[in-house]
Length: 303
Image (cartoon, one colour):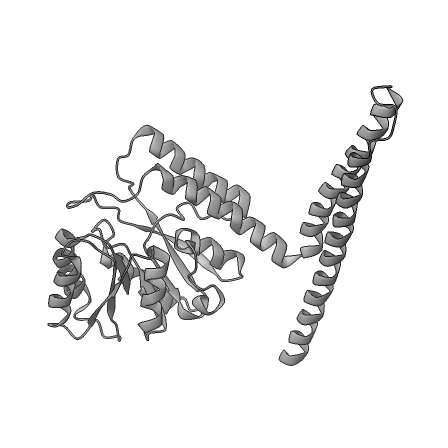
């Protein structure tokens, strides 16, 4: 289990003792890795004192703060288990849900990823709730996934998922969607959403907008990587359209008498746009051909 933390001093000991209590009698091999993401309070000191008394726990510090995805990635690098559980360190996620998810994966080996779905959700302002529901609805429409709460931090997955989708940028927010579109079997499970007892939430409305941008980027990334000829063909069509509009404008200005000559600047601009369109289309064709050929080679190697 990997738990990123930042300025969670009052929550550290409570969460630590809760995890030990829940997992101490487990028959399987487990560990909990705390990543202090550049905390400015006593989080690091408390973690260090706690892990010294328990061999199942480890603590690492990132300085300066590098963000939640980087903290999780650091935890994954030092972890050794086949299955990886993630949760926030603010006390709102229940460690017992991690245990339930792991047990489910053990009983259903065809499943690669269990994504949490917070239920019941804590009380939020109307605007926050509206934006959150809208963002999740957008993800279902835009990506084509039935996952209803991608923003939930509680999740457990097989390590092979990380081999395909590394934790880079801010991927932690929609990691379940990345796993799904990459061909892994993902299911959703209801998890507890407890009120924050200590400290203040670090997530404002900006998180929702970042989530929406992540969803859009994921869709574009998948679209380009699967069939680049279609994606780049659409881009080249935009260049061709711009070129056509430039030529048409130059001719219209001449025919209407607004200018007594064909505007050379517009014609040059149109020629450049047309050339870029051709090059983009050719690049898409070459890339698509290479991907198809690479896929054929991989199939031959497998057989």
